[in-house]
Length: 151
Image 1 (cartoon, rainbow, N blue to C red):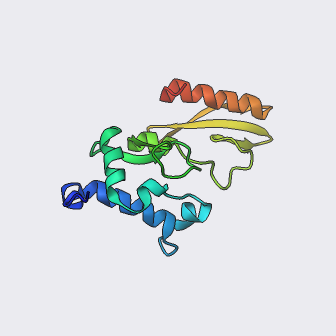
Image 2 (cartoon, rainbow, N blue to C red):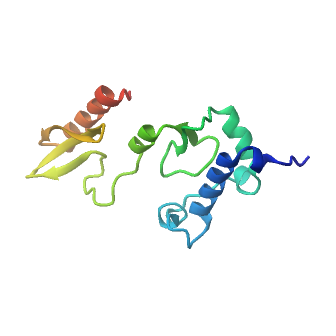
Image 3 (cartoon, rainbow, N blue to C red):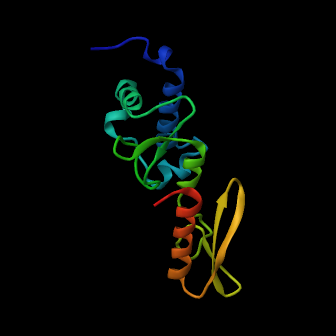
């Protein structure tokens, strides 16, 4: 059964759906290198028609102030890997930066030691310098719990 007017009734969700497909499928899209170029796909269920995406969105907490966020930022756009998040939540759920040489978010080498940092309200908070990567990673994880409420 074909439902008409879905695009017109849900323009913001339709634009979000088109955007994620463009990022993953259109090689001339400016964001393609960070999505499709990294092997990120749109699941079969969502890739061809808008209705399944719309149904998922409306039954999984969609609100106008939220954006779609992939729980595993290296995973595909699929019902199992997506959620609706605030801009702050989404900003915290990023992959490790390309220039990160130690492999842990929020940790880098500084003056021969591992330095852990976290951003809160656009301010960098220094969590300490450590002799081992494990200590710095633990400090970062503790900082996430303290400042972001992430367990």
